[in-house]
Amino acid sequence: MSKKKVGLPPLDWLRVFEAAGRLGGFSAAAREFGLTQAAVSQRIANLESWLGRSLFVREARGVSLTVEGESYLPLVQDSLRALERNTEDLFGTAPRALRVAGLSSHIQALVLPSLGAFRALRPEVQVTTDSVARRSSLEDERTWLQIRYGRGSWPGRTADLIAPEVLTPMAAPGVSWGAPVIDLRGERPGWQDWMQKTGDTDLPRTGLSFDSMEHALGAARQGLGVALGSVALASADLASGRLIRLGRPDLKTRDGYWLTWPRDRAQSKKQQALIGDFLQALRAAV
Image (cartoon, rainbow, N blue to C red; front, side, top):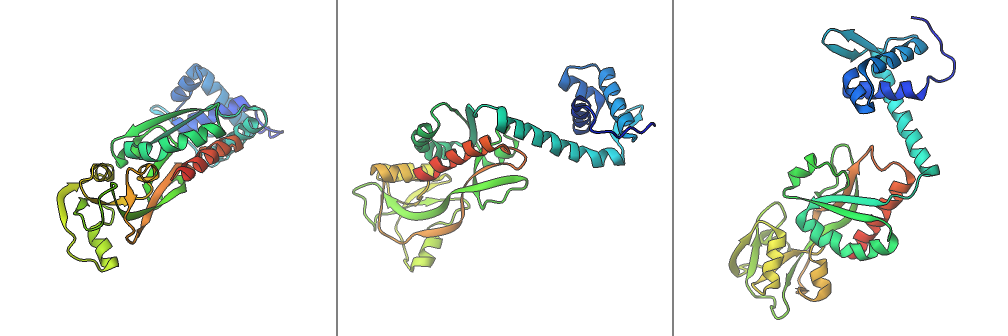
């Protein structure tokens, strides 16, 4: 194979190589670019001739990257992303849309109260939300900007804290401390943990038990008892007076609510600024 290492190979060849390496074949790359397989094969052959190295092994059942191809692929991918990011920063327009996914209760309690402040910062941006039924569903959700509950560590994702999870006794106006308490099942600390911290014993029970903080807070709003409620998720209720804190000790946890996204996304300055404004509005609303 002839060697010709003068300058850089054409960008078109590099983009086709990146697609073929990422997708695992010439046919898939051809579909992505709307080219014929023969056109993709020719561009790859041109690039290999330019570099003086084989990048793919051609076999009857398909192609696979050579050692040189495996080494070159991440370099090309990083370079193309940097070029795209810097081009967007220099010549692109400001992002016009923000799409965020999360549990329905988190969209309701965290995103909706923040929209007024965010719209004041970004009146031109269209906001779209996608609700998921279970936290595990977020792993398969195609919307890459997500609100998650946990400790801020998800493989391959950047996470910025919106608010820590703090639990405190709260109830509807007119319901005082000493009224029966509402039980909440799940991974959050509950009344037993709260009593271990405070020394209280024998709290009267309502006979109501929920597996959702949203439902426990709803029962408390109806005056059905005292909830060990999430300060973050109840922020709108507390601000409006639908719920009141009862002056008892808080229970701080190790968890929190996070705005998260894949590490390979939101790399341009304009995208980062948009997410920063959204995060600012989320934090202000809690």
